[in-house]
Length: 603
Image (cartoon, one colour):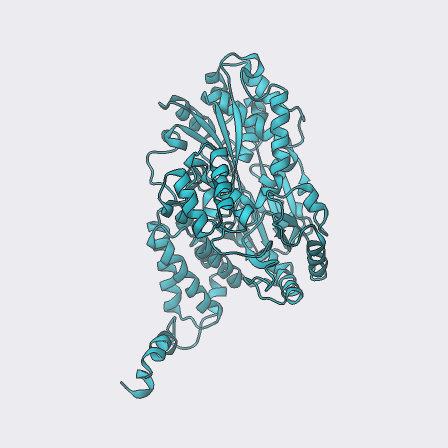
């Protein structure tokens, strides 16, 4: 790197106040300026921030959207999930490979394009989908590939990097750039008043303690899947001792099949920001942090515009609503492609500019969260619920749903159904009723709450969607009668191998072994003993993993085993035993090095 590059990096670091906790933003700027984070850039950043280079190395290497080696100026990331594969993603991938003359994972010789798979990008209802320079493209066909490449080649300076975060102007140049709204059925949550500040105004008429009382009376529970009572979380955070208190909005929806945050942030952002402001008032916080997943970078300009508008209306800033002492503002933190950052303690680490490894608990975030201060971390949908509760009252909210699961739930439906999209339904609806609503009369099974949830067979379609029965974060993937249950479970197992942070051996090693076990089962080489050992391993990974990712990674295997034992048994090999890795394969590297084969030579 030349002197100009070093000076540029120094300027970026200073623009963020030489704040080590803003390393995510700083590295994002470096990545865009140079196309990757070189060794020289790492050293320059370390010098300017006064930290060891290894701190930057470990952070950069953790996130999928940061590169340590130079890649193509244009990045084409194709969504790779069971739903995208069902809808033709592999045909689209082959079309791009043929048009570019490269394979997936490679870069063209002229450095213009890199083509690769990526995890779910929040468009499960509109697959096959892709991110092209951060811009989402939906419902792709193989015929779209050459048109997209032609548009990219014609756009601007061929030696320059595309804008990042991407803008609407960038999207306008690409075929199929507009994506349709996912909202199919609105309910009381999304069909209510469009008022930008109804919730906040109602909150400011009460004391902070009374706001928490109202949220508690509504029986609102977290909509991310865990279902922790929101009122209790806010009360614990407010009472905790700290120099500052924070509200963090978790918008890192990486669970395959989930896309409600995309809808809420793109079509109802004021409801989200109003809920954050209500929480800020209740907690005594001065800062709100919205952690936006890197796959949603294209929302950046619009969300910043909404924040500027709210500041101009006096809904953010100092003395909000004429309330002396209520000073509150919101900062958006952009992620960089890491599923595990949806786990709350990993999200906190990322917010502080580190790799997104989970923290040991206790202490919990309500006591010691962002920068060691009390922090309430809430899902996007939860904060929208809080807005409506303050606007219309706890009794109104509790009139929907069930006794233990009040309100409504946003269900993200994709797969083999006539009408995919988002449905706002009251808690207590059965799976059968949901399938009738979306047009899926012949579903073979439903993957409920994403890969980390459970596979539900037709015999259980009478179960109710509620915390007291089937809890969910919202993902509902429907698979018809012609789908291979075991191959889908294998794809989900591969997803967890890719997304494991690698911190603890039960998850790092266990997910890989589970994937290998499923490969053997799918190939028809497994025995009854293999099934038993795979199930035992899955239960061990579940019990011994450090965080929620490892504890739920075995679910695609364990829940399909419980729901479809006959399918597993039908794939069993007739032989008594076949090793997971044949001896010849295990010895291949040693044979090449030594020049002798102990099996053939009898040694």
